[in-house]
Image (cartoon, rainbow, N blue to C red; front, side, top):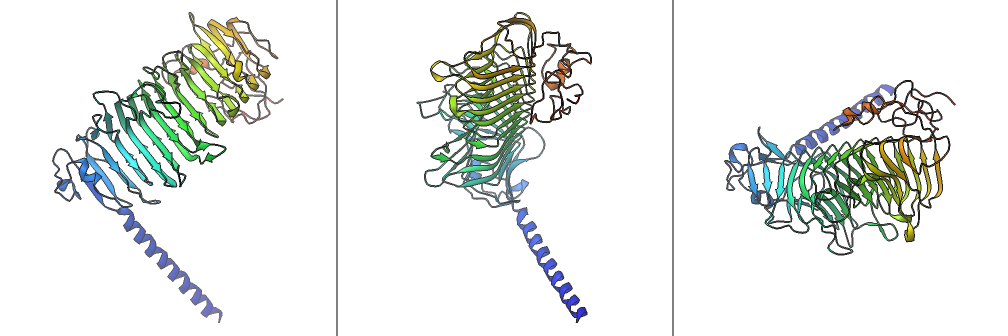
Length: 514
């Protein structure tokens, strides 16, 4: 009997294994999909498009078809396509629709020439990847809602796994002002992703914009927009939004803006020369109406003007924003701002380096609550005058529960301080060296030379910042105050242990026990 049961169990296992192998094989066949080729050099729209030798010639051949999970639409390198690429097809989990290139040479280029609102439009789709294309949309006149790439979902529900990778988007000449009216934005952007819905709320879950280059896109570089960002009546935030490794240069207004997201990650981007042409307010990288945003390892530099023009901003209706391990330099407006009044709650700004930013280095405007600013380094060189801290306030009120701890303010130029009427303001274990006006008192203030390796020596890139490490005999070593939930590392990746006495500044010399 036992032998018979063992045989039956083995047979069942074998049948089950065979079944799963058949399913896996069938899925693998499906995952292959079909490949379609498009060449402006030697294609013909009468071809089937299913091989390199029988490629289509135009975007129309792609726009007039529906694609299936696993399909690839591949454009030949060196090809130039006039018009708009449109997709409204979806892949499946593990079985994406992929748009990319074939061959060696320059990226295939799509030129909308200002005749379309966007050069690439993906509408009500999911499980899509678009990579390795050059995109431009330059018209005879500037126009509202002009974009290079637009991803749009409306009354769709949740759109999953959309990836934009290694795109070169440039010369998109939208208008440079932000709004048409109080409620309507101009939406002129290099890459824009929007979600809306009147009867079916729509959002992204798994939106990745990675390793793209954007150049001369007006008004903005990369932006998400959502109509589902009202906490009281219409809150359906995007999830798993990642904007990583992009280079964004010579932008009319904002560099990167996320709206209506929970848990967005913005990291390892370079935003250079933002706010170059817009007449209104803009900043480098910032969230609005977002929860739990992390902004880290970014470099933002050479923003123009003083209408904001800070590297970083935590804006209205945000909760629990963390700005950490970033490098800000040579921005005319300043290092960072926190604004938006009572709707903005819980900000952490830590382990960042600011060099030669100007105007208002730290700008805290409005009645926000719970702001932690610690272990940052702020440096200005000779000939620069700036407000080290400047509060907004007045009818909008002042911030409360604001804590500055373990920061270094090193000014060879001149820094001025104004904390306004902030409630429950705490200043402790901060270091001030150089030229300061109205220096705040605070607890355990340090005014000795920090003994940096080479203050002010930062250039382009994180590799240039070793000069902001403390020398071994620095008076700031082990002179800080422990911070709970401190992120676990300093600017250079050295460990920062909870409950241990840290060094002041962004570099941690080995900590000691209390």
